[in-house]
Length: 436
Image (cartoon, rainbow, N blue to C red; front, top):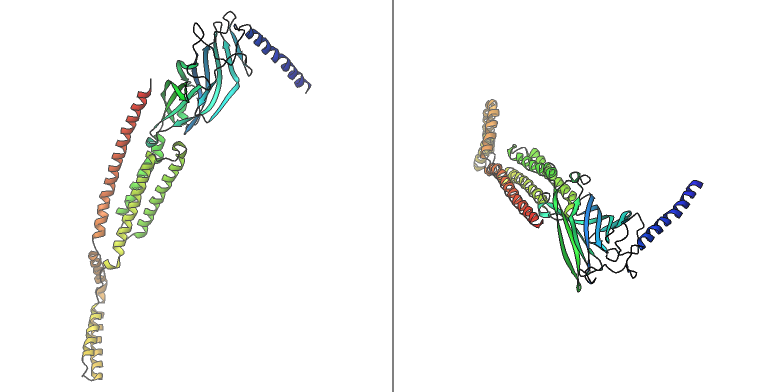
């Protein structure tokens, strides 16, 4: 416990002395006794023109890329301050506390959603010719814009814009230094994020605000999304489910339970695949309709129409109006004939008519008993004749569906992929034209 207290006392005594020594060395470098750290450095022979700040960005890492991404980078700024004397030796100050009696550019980032500076990871270098280098580490979240229509075959553009907060372009202008932005590929393995690094573009322009213009720098990083996972996990399963739904057209028309269970299963599976894909991709596209959504829901429509075709054909088969009428047996016909004759013979004696009816019925029974051995064959022939008499329209619908469904799905895929390839090529040309 006592050792820690002694160490804290030593640090409290030593660190201020080091910074006091540094500030004293810096004070010796100030050439102008009227130095104002709130006034920007003026250049030119009469010190009337504004100064400039050159910026270089070294990207250390990129994190998860959705509608935004987190960047860790070093912001390096260079400027000349003629008020600093060139006679002293170069001075470098690093750490949490930097000299506060000199001017620093008021650089800020536009459109960022969070910003964090690391006070421990910064330094400033005062050269012997009056130039200053200011390096600090920054972490921020910057917006990224996917091409929603082409998702997941799109290129994501992540934009970073910086400018001066209070100085106009006539007072302080910003310029890119060297290659402007460098992305460390050793630390930025964007493959595990599901992207390819295509390149970057830079721009220097003025932002109008109120009655003044402010100098700004803009850089755009282009990231190509990997789509192989979407092909294997979404596109191929969706196409296979649609093809599976067509097997209903080849199942026996009288096997209603089998056809119904297969149709319901394909519909529910397709619906589950579509909803899961939409929910998983929502963070990338912010709930907008994408190319993959269009494909999935068209496949869902194909499965629904296959189910409707089954319902139509099944209704046609089991519709009572379309069922063939059953033929009456010879016994029933003879009974009706006998009863008709007996009812018409009103003048005959009742006993005589009863005896005649009974003898006729006995003759009928003998005839039926003699034909028992042939009934099984007759029944089978009757069934075949009933089937042949059923309406043929449901067979035509089924045969037409076997050809029409695959043909329409093939045409849809051809139009979909050709249109997608054209749009991808057009988007790539736009990206290439935007690069310097």
